[in-house]
Length: 388
Length: 102
Image 1 (cartoon, rainbow over the protein chains, first blue to last red):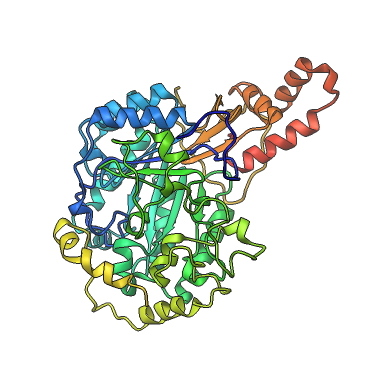
Image 2: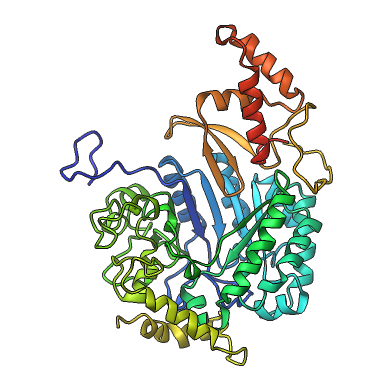
């Protein structure tokens, strides 16, 4: 119970409001991308929530101070009530972002979403080359995506183009950025694959080499300088090649609240895999209780949970010890130092993953994200993250 | 909100802020947030909390006035602040480099 105004018995820093609500409206998706951020066992999760429940979540989170709303999935366009949810978010004063593959869009739907007040659309591409795009997506999608990117701009939306980068497409970065210019993107997100869930299953096949990463960095810098003030380009080096971990989610339970299709509230995309957690559900708890008082959201707030070398590290307020899920995946302990950090005694585990990927050839089959593979690989992933 | 259907011209080198009419960039808006107790600038997937003076300047950006005219309007509104035209223009220059205004 949270009682307004009464002093907390435990000395905790004040809990700031969530700024971001990511609403994963469905896990249904026509694409089968092998780096999907959805959990591998998505097919076994609970029932997708209805319109009324989502509207209540939108209202509750907004009253807590949430400002940015991500409408995501799966493919959010699968939902027939998307326009209703957008209209509600407009009424509430959210800045609404639709995060889509473009499949399920047409010019008329782009216009109806605009009329409902949607602020922005992010369209993802798998590659700048048609065949490669469709191979990674697991379906013929590229030509339609190009049309939809144009329809998004024609409807008057600002557009972010998102390219997910990995070993097989990183050499096309220049081509991708030229495509973004041609499509008049306002922002380009060069989203380096993050190795959780599906991407972790496929890590040996997807992790680029250091040489590839450095070359791509050079290209990104060149275009950033050229397009300053016209088109923002975000590029982040895969953290496996960094010496310090990423400040994951800007801190656990700090700004980001994710709600899955079945109503589970998570501090990040990958947290559901962590053992010893009971993640709250928006159907049985209020967003306020979830954010402020639930054990799950408080577990890694502040610095009290940290171990060495994080605890005495002067950089702990900058990177919060890195990513809890990555720490768990490598070490079996979610409270350990993210082993990307070269102060971690277990950094060699990351280096071993890099070598393992380096010795993997393109003959190794990629595991595509679909319901069949979800059932088949849910157990395999659990084995991959078993403590060593 | 209607945006002029103007093709974006991509510069090969960054051009500093012009002295023509300035507008908020496409997809940007300012709103007051009671929870935060301040104005915020919202744009695709991003939010910036604005200081009082930053909010004041950005709220004077209306698609009609130039940087010089914005500074003049603010000085007319706050004569006690003295000559703030240099500060206003350098803030607008930063806002332009960040893509908040065009």
